[in-house]
Image 1 (cartoon, helix red, strand yellow):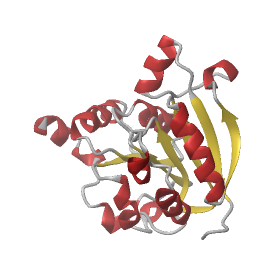
Image 2 (cartoon, helix red, strand yellow):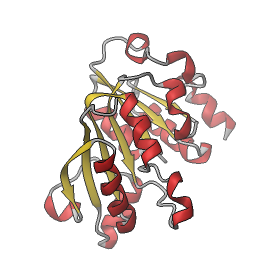
Image 3 (cartoon, helix red, strand yellow):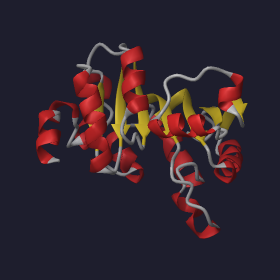
Image 4 (cartoon, one colour):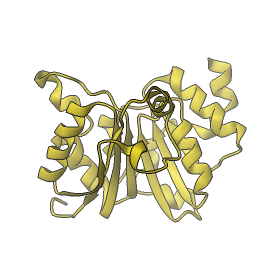
Length: 207
């Protein structure tokens, strides 16, 4: 895997702490910063970055095995408005400053079933408070999952953490055409699995 990573090294940000509060200064000429948590093999992130050349994307993924595929996809398309970070979402405030991002994507994250694991869910109160600091006022979280219990849990947490919900659906693909999709989403959609989704906009009350 090392040679594959090295070939795409220009798209990896190995020291994201140095960019905290300065992403759009370092990467000049972009209108906004969007973050994806858990980008996996990168189909969604790379497609979104290709469709929005004036937006800069930062994609987090803990698994190097998955991230190398994402890197190769972005490299093959010659994209320069995206950087990949091999770090855990818990560390986000070390490399994103207050009010720095306009949008956060959370696509098909681990549902962490069971009450004792609730704090690990990416839509738990602790994570949402952190996202609220990283997002600018009016910034959005775009959330998708195939896990209904996680979705219902997340709706409650969004409401209690100062987010206003919109575009809420429990059968996304039945209501509208969806592009880009993630790798998981393509598989689920092909099997007829219903996808839950919503947009959560931060009101700014907890900032």
